[in-house]
Image (cartoon, rainbow, N blue to C red; front, side, top):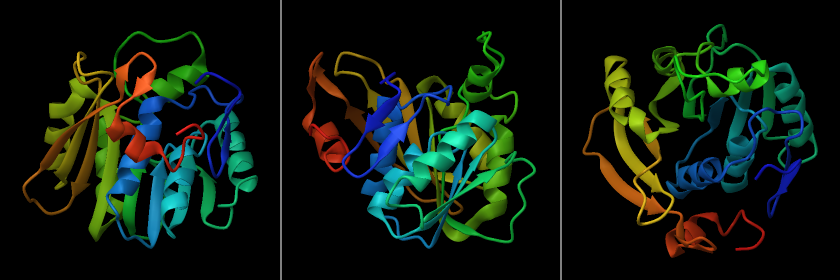
Length: 236
């Protein structure tokens, strides 16, 4: 998915000015969130990037979305992608450091596909470092900010590498956020999970856990993946 643009059924994501591109796992994440049927008036997209998640969720709901992005080039692309879409009236792009973001709003729905890595090898390109690494926003800082803005019955959806699963649960718990649903994403039935998708809330209940396998083989998607992505991918 490294093309300069990626066309979906109801919108197009242009990504030539954004370091981190559209990925299969991010698409799966957006579709998984929508599959939960969450009713929300306001949504916050933390680290909105190209606007992929905001537009996927705008397609599935009537929610009003604040899409926050810090990196200049990516923010410009976010704005243009939103303005060229049919969802422009639903999504407000905001250029801000989420740690300094101020609002009186409470959000029923908060989503984030944040920088994945802390204290690991970095690229020489500063934009990619900002997108991939969390020196600018650590995981604990993310949970602290989410707790400030989540509504009483709100949900927080988070995509992370699978190896950080237990770390996420522990840090979220320290801020009074508890996993109500977890999905483990696998490239194939033969692979170990490589991503984990969370649904957190402010109240504890039994956690629903599932596995989602992306492909039957190198060229064929699984029925579960097709069911989730058929409203978005052009060729499904």
